[in-house]
Image (cartoon, rainbow, N blue to C red; front, side, top):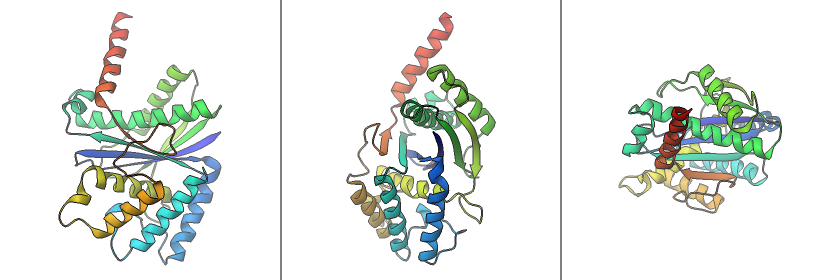
Length: 259
């Protein structure tokens, strides 16, 4: 089965960084984008405008609640899945994970999310073929997309004995006429998770609109965003344990030395 994975990240400058992925059967992608266009038009919003966590305000709260409700309707119907990794970037082990380089640590965590997402698809859906779409941001570490595709395929071929499961890794804009609308959904979800995990909702002067939207998400989810979820949950939040990742990395390095 063919899938599209739409990715984004939030909180590069905060303690808790969130990396999120929306996993959509390829046949559903265009249908969901068209519905999102119609939803925007219904609420008198231009398509080229952007739903974005940073733009959540009292004035637009009802519109954001409507798009969140739309997302959870499709989640409940199994038309898509969502995964998010939460990473404590202040831990010493996080820097060690990237050999002392925060940029490399970021790449490795993003790579881990993609690898785990694709592995689960490959196990559940024989013959999976995956297109990965990344938000084309200017204020993040630059991705070398061809290298990312090659490395993902090599890792998955080694672990799953399946060749060329990644069809391509491509950049997409989150705003404009030719934007990838589903990136905006990921931005809202990871923004809300980061708002809670970094404790912004408890700070003096916190945005009432963002708190309200967070509560709306939690009510639809049936769980607080403070909690992690099991690996097979359709809405999966998982705190990335850098110590476990470091142990696996060292074990792999030792095996290579012995060979």
